[in-house]
Image 1 (cartoon, chains in turn yellow, brown, purple):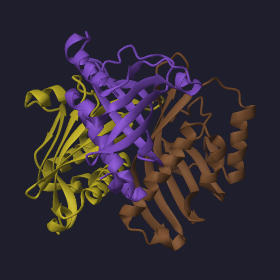
Image 2: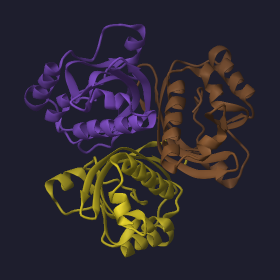
Image 3: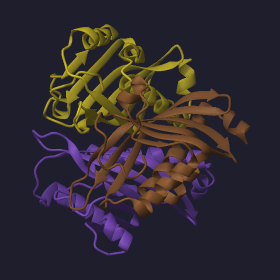
Image 4: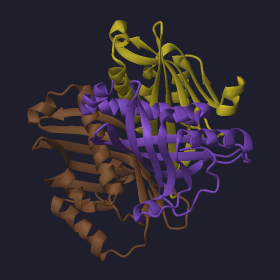
Length: 164
Length: 164
Length: 164
């Protein structure tokens, strides 16, 4: 099946990515966190990192998950061990850019904005940035091998409870 | 013509929805409110409802219009009877998800963000959420049979003058 | 090559514009400003203008560049002569509307939102509006002949350093 995706025209590939990001966001916004690790391959890298650190090549990350197992641990933390107040996050994506295939790996970038709503407060901008993604085809589906959310702030959000 | 839409590939259907939401937003952002009811079928349901109420199945809605006639009444209210200060609303959508056809009805979801600008004030986030939509084909066009804007707040915006 | 674009189906043309806006945004967000003028033809018009002025036909613009040379001057100003503090801008687009071809010129509109992050501050909404665009095909690529960013505010942003 890998070949099928690699043979897609740029336009069709764009539509596949558009659908994938929509499903990804839907999973997170609807708080179906248990389904979230399934968007990744087992041997994956997921990071949330300030843009300054990313551009300078500094290793410090706000979140760092080095396999799908880590992602599952995160979900357990969200559901069971983390202590935090209720909040709603709404995510938007825009400007999908297909950088191309390198072997079996598709590189893409997408801008994102996340909005946070706390109880009895107005919605505010929570975190914006660009996701640097690498995808591979597994069982006929595009999955993330790498997803690095590079956010536009030197401040670490004090409430990064849920994934981006 | 119904069959034409139902026979569309998921990719083509995605593009049709993308175009439809763009036209819908353009109509509202440009304040062509008289054209707004024409995006709906006569026997329609349009609601704006807080997410908490929606998820708990509570009936209370911030806006409730149970037919296209109600939508037209809303437009009359906006144009003639409501008292409110000038404001500009800018809407964005993202993450269109096609849930599929059930008979003649297409279910879809889309995230939205609305930004409000009052005179001599900075633009701010006004309302974000997800629209739960059901569409049917009438005269070769997709129209809303149901559009429920579920917003991420327990606060009712104090100035929900225009549709979302 | 002009004919190729003009013969595209509305769906394919939508995907071409989607890709173009993504590249345009990527160029600006990643601060590759030297590449920015190349999105325009030599004889172009680029404006940033408050919506009220635009709708009333008032000539006053916040930015006015009447050729690609002016755009290059802007880039020189950003890189060398302007005095301003560091900031990050993240742009999103949504709701691409294709108004159609008039001769060789394609008219389109797209909503945009720009978010600004200053050092040690939270990200905030910077500027939202709609871009009124006219495009032509040059060497097999769509380029802007006219791009007018009509923003939803009567306040001129006090820090419009980078293009939109």
